[in-house]
Length: 265
Image 1 (cartoon, rainbow, N blue to C red):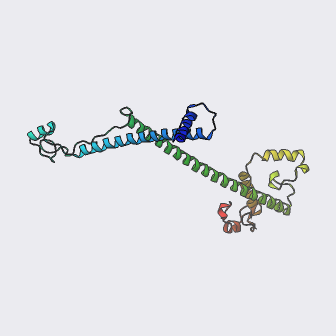
Image 2 (image 1 turned 45 degrees about the vertical axis):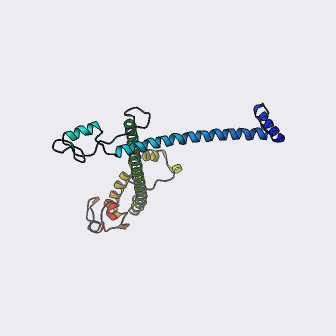
Image 3 (image 1 turned 60 degrees about the vertical axis):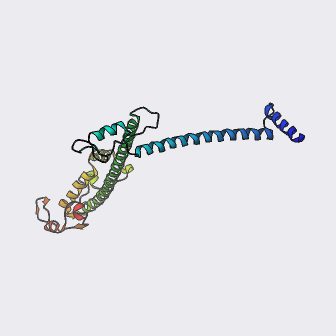
C-alpha cells in the first residue's frame, strides 16, 4: 500500500515539475489531458445539438396541435360562428390552414437569405453566359478554320491549274510557231538566274494579278487561241476564222462543259 502511494506521489511530482520535453511519461500525461479536453468539447457540442433538437420537436408538436378553447383568438372566432376545419371569411373564401411559420435559426439579418440567393442566381447566370460565349467563340473559330482550310485548298488547286495552263500554253504556242509568250507569265517562268532585267520587270508587273485572275485570263486565251481546255485535257477542232481572230469552235462549245473547274466537277 505504501509503495502505491509512493508511485502516485512520484507521478504527481512529474506532472507538476518543469521536466525536460520528450520524456515518455510526460508525453503520455499531456496526451491524456488533450484527449480529455477534446472529449469535453465533443460532449458540449452534442449537448447543444440535442437541445436544438428538443426545441424543434417541441415546436413541431405545438404547431401540429389544434387550437383549443383556451386560446383567446380561437374563442373569439367561435363566438362569431367559426367552426374548426372551415375556411375563414364570411362566405368561406379564405384560407383553411394557418400561414406556416418560417423559423429563423441563424444569426444573419433579415433579407440576408434573399440577397444570398439572388447573388447565387446572378453568379450562375454569369457562368452560363460565359459558357455560351465560349461555345460561340469555339464554333466561330472552327468555322473560320474550315473557311481558311477550304480557301487554302482552292488556292492550291488554282495554282496547280495555273501551272498546267502555263505548260499547255507554252507547248501549244511553240507548236503554232509562237516564240514569245503574249505575257511573260503565260509560260512557265525560267529560273531566277536565267532572267534578265527586262524579264524581272515584266514579272513584277504581272504580280499585281491574283492567281485566280491569271488562271481566268490564261484559260480564256487557250480556249480562244488554241481551242484547248485544261480541265478536259483536249484540243478541240478549230472553228471558222475571220482574219487573224478564230471564233469558238462548234466542237468546243458542244463537248466542253464550261470554262471553269466548277463546270467540270
